[in-house]
Image (cartoon, rainbow, N blue to C red; front, top):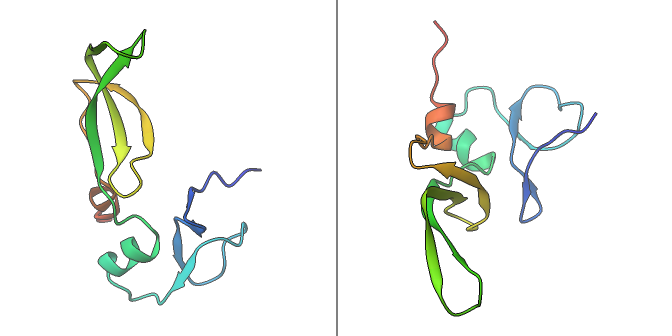
Length: 101
């Protein structure tokens, strides 16, 4: 089974408390670490950004593809995918800031 964990600059983007995960990747934290510490240590201290899809067919003239955006990482500028202009961006910090009811 593949772990599908992003590795950026040689660091697995995951943090854990307790026992080492089955894949052996990530940074171990104390169980009472703050979510901000967890986010930084997990390598998730970046934002998702949007930019218009721009293309060229001849290397000189550029056109923008209507209603299409590239979603990319603010830290590495790595593209994550192409989305429509209706896509709502969710930041890593928002995803980590959940509460169990």
